[in-house]
Length: 273
Ligand SMILES: NC(=O)c1ccc[n+]([C@@H]2O[C@H](COP(=O)([O-])OP(=O)(O)OC[C@H]3O[C@@H](n4cnc5c(N)ncnc54)[C@H](OP(=O)(O)O)[C@@H]3O)[C@@H](O)[C@H]2O)c1
Image (cartoon, rainbow, N blue to C red):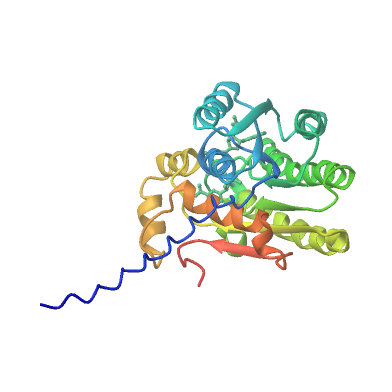
């Protein structure tokens, strides 16, 4: 009989539990326009999950309220402000509200925009053309101007993302004013990146492809078959969920993209590859 005492098994060291992962936007205050639905709402939810305190802006109060309450119920910090991007006073007031509420502004997602009645440019009314320019082109300029001042005065460094469109990178026979305004946003984005880079304020744009939101469904309702046609032009063969666009915006707003500025990031399923 072997009575040699068996070597006690050395207990394996318990691996240290990873400390709770810090969110991508931890400690940041984020301002999001067009946050009542679609890509903006998905972004507000995601930014809050990633640790940001979020101020949601758009015109439709009941939508803003619903998304804000959802974020709070999930443990996030959010509030909202009614804001019309076509009204300079309203845009300035919304950014001011963010600073009053949270004491600072670190990052901003200028995402709110309007569609246009689809059709050739000679069929578009001057009123519709002017409205698209006011909301989709002048709106982001107004917002950036107010945001830069707020970032400078509080966080002192920051990041801005503007929502452009894959339509900014091609001809748009159905949405000519919309495409032109989005291309103008790309130009504003590049100019802002160059102007404010020395202050460590990064400015980028995302160019979503086909994304399943009210804006797309409205276009598809007016021009039936649009979604199917766009999907056929998309290597991934499908439209995006708004959350997939929000993920790109979150990364560009986060410190993980600290050396990225002045870019237009396509999030288009490969449509313009
Ligand atoms: N869906 C796509 O396929 C697609 C593709 C490329 C780019 N995009 C861009 O993605 C962004 C988000 O659009 P979405 O697809 O999420 O559309 P959406 O569901 O229609 O959302 C648009 C958001 O913008 C807000 N908005 C519209 N006019 C406004 C105004 N005058 N002032 C303030 N807010 C205003 C809307 O709220 P109120 O109406 O309540 O103000 C809403 O919250 C837009 O910049 C759009 O151009 C979308």
